[in-house]
Length: 176
Image (cartoon, rainbow, N blue to C red; front, side, top):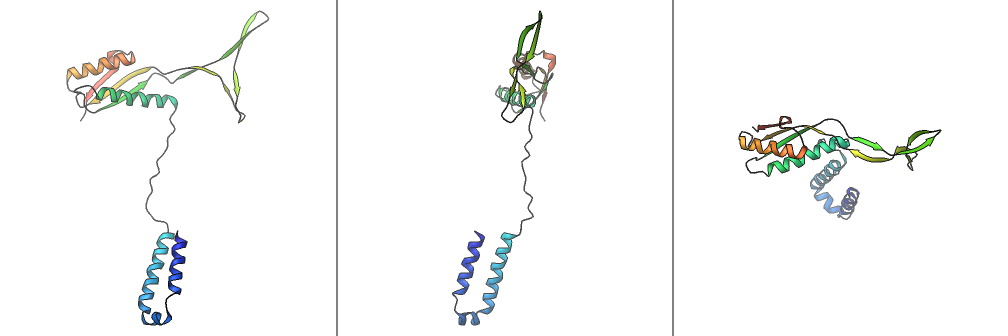
């Protein structure tokens, strides 16, 4: 695009009559300087700071936690009187993967080996049969309606029933 502009400018300058150049030499010099500034402005990188979104890879446990927090925020904010809310969930431990085993009998003993899958890239992985998600250890909720005992009770009951945790594991506070 920049080269096309330069070529067009050069072609336009060639077609100008020499007599006209002599009469308007100051104007032509100014036009050429202006064109040079435009070209230079395209070629010189700007000093503007470009923001690059950092992509942070979350582990599946962290992703599970973030998803649960967002879902709970959506549910709680839809309760009458709660208003805007922010949720933090703590987990007991990370997820646990259960791998497939192949069992066999060897000289009157039962033995087993894990089932290993070979990938096309040459790496090996165990065959995952199931994944046990981490248990919720506690929930903290900060909301606009956190000063009402009725709202606090509703939020606590909701968290207890959703996550099968005790009331002492749920904290509700009023948002600033």
